[in-house]
Image (cartoon, rainbow, N blue to C red; front, side):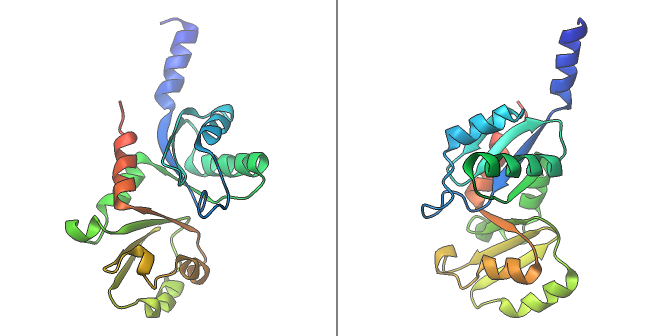
Length: 191
């Protein structure tokens, strides 16, 4: 390999796949972010192999940056381009796999559950306070920076309210269902 080829090969080798989860876009006509426009924007920001999955803000990309740097860069780019703020949580593929594998639910319940990634691990004292907010037929388990949720009545009929949890725990969270997590893990598998 010659100089430029070697440098390109090294840069490609240093780049890792990341999954960026955007919170609350394209929901009920609010914070509209067309996926093609988002892919183009993030590519212009220097991210490689930018892909999106469904309209709810799931982005796969390659970068040599760290998760927090990617998060900051995406949030600033969206604010600048679209004119509104969007919270972003960035995970490596192995971090997302760990979230999936750490689900406390049986396989049957896991398939009907939600994985709510938080921007940080909640304070232990605040966790004690939210224990009283558990409802009948609903299971909430918080492990590190992930909240696992299942409702036998379904998410749409649940009494669980993410905004209340975020406020009480002083965190930001974004939910994905089982099928979305499985698809993101599949799409982010190394070629």
